[in-house]
Amino acid sequence: MSKYLLPWTVPLMLTAAGAGLLAGWIYSYYHLSVPMRLPGEDGRPSALSFDASSARSKQGTLETFDGAPARISGSWPTFRGSNYDAVSTESVPLIRSFPSSGPKELWRVSLGEGYAGPAVRNGRVFLIDYDMARQADAIRCFSLEDGREIWRYSYPVAVKRNHGMSRTIPAVDDRYVVTIGPRCDVTCLEAETGQFRWAIDLVKEYGTQEPLWYAGQCPRIEDGKAVLAPAGKDVLMMAVDCESGQVVWKTPNPRRWQMTHSSILPIFYEGRRMYVYCAVGGVAGIAADDGTLLWETDAWTLRIHVPTPVWLGDGRLFFSAGYNKGSMMMRLVKQQDTILPEVLFALPPEVFGADQQTPIYYQGFLYGVRPNKELVCLDLDGKIRWSSGPQNKFGLGPYIIADGMIIVLNDEGVLSLIEARPDEFVLLAKAKVLDGPESWAPPALVEGRLLVRDFTTMKCLDLRKRE
Image (tube, rainbow, N blue to C red; front, side, top):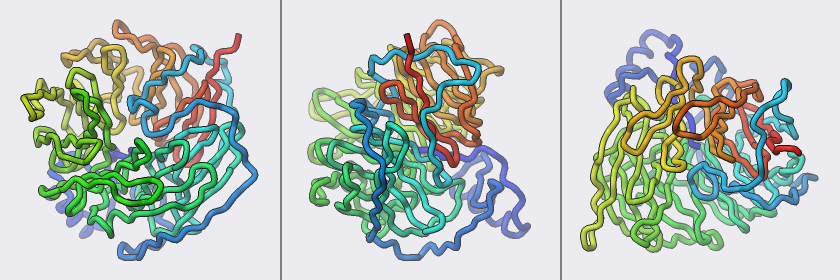
């Protein structure tokens, strides 16, 4: 989602008294100089009644339809793909130019308002949606072949427009799919059938504070366990057995760090699997086997944090954010039994920051969109190798890398293909593929089929190169 909503327009007029009080509260609480968008200020009237204290039920409804899984073996099973880096490792050759009509559309489906992106496994497309008529989160499973719905599991939860509703990406393995809804409801279902396994209300059960624009954290599944960061009163992170719903381990949260929109990053360091998470308060490294806190730092912290950290290997982590935060490079240093994070350098936002989308590390270089909306390439010393320039801006749209190309959407749904090379910016092709606005959902690519969405529509585009 994730991750995936950040404000960027100036708020519309509120009532005079309400505007002054609200602006003062936001400034004092978040210490930000950037105006924030508020519910209803996106020009879409709030159509739902909303009671923040309303009970959220774990009981849900499963519906089945006539869709059938595609006979396609590739997968994009979680936020940023199989390796958590937004880089496709598939060998399917992709087109490097578009016909005048743009890439071929294979199918499309209508969705509720939001920015939630898809995950793909075993020929199925999984997505968490919001059903405004029923006032329910809807976990939906489609066929990758033709977009027909296979099943839908819905549970009631009161959500009003807050620049869309759902905005996270499911995690799926061969047996289970796990989602986090906008109001921090975690649900585990059987991936093949949609049958309910278990659910956790992070707010009620762990004291999680809902992020300002709803949950943006995307769950992880590793070794049959769902890995979550409630950042609640007592638990910073935890692992839950997908089969039983039993908690396997918990990481304490004595500093009362809070949930951000950022997602958990799994890495290997010094032969050990660990999870890195950016909370409100700092960054922590957690042991994947038992939840032990291995290291923490407050050198990088802010209240509104969306991008996930980027693992560069050799102990290096790259952090970036919006709201004039910029970016930072850290290195983990092991000293006997202790891991110490040290800051290598920090960059001001005009050099590089990332408002919403997570930068990509590819073949020794970083690629990302900075606050002036230009796509840039950085080396690992923080120096800009190239910029797309003012004539090529990409807003808050998402991007991945595949077949040596950066595949990027802008806010209005224009898809661009760009060479992923450090020596110069080379635009190969572009075409409008979505109506927009706010085409912000991270895409998924499986065997040349690109899944993209704007505010209310998801499309499957054929990027396969034809002989």
